[in-house]
Length: 134
Image 1 (cartoon, rainbow, N blue to C red):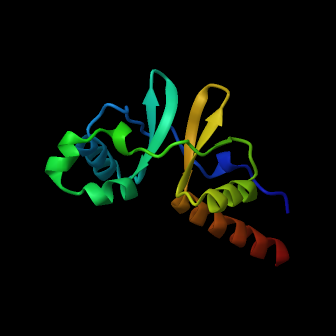
Image 2 (cartoon, rainbow, N blue to C red; image 1 turned 135 degrees about the vertical axis):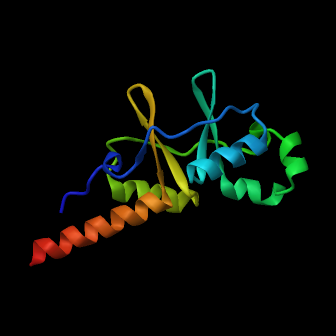
Image 3 (tube, rainbow, N blue to C red; image 1 turned 180 degrees about the vertical axis):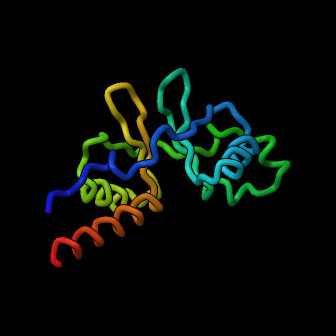
């Protein structure tokens, strides 16, 4: 079975945030959009990623208003190309112990692939495998 590219299962056009934004802004964006990872962009350049896990230790609203995204973001950014086979992307996520990878295309960021996307892809690949055997 040919492994599909990550582009098939990634979340397209992810929301992003700037490194100078306050953590409270990141938390609010994640909560209102129901997301757990934000690429961090500075002058059209990908400089980091912040996840809801990065926010847990700083749960106090007062702290979140005084700390910037750039102070807590993860670097370097783990990224893959949009045509990277899904199994290789999952290997990268396991090796790097990360909950997401930023997906790059010819014009920059085209998506983000998270553990949630991986579970959806896994279910789809399993269903296709069973259907092909029937």
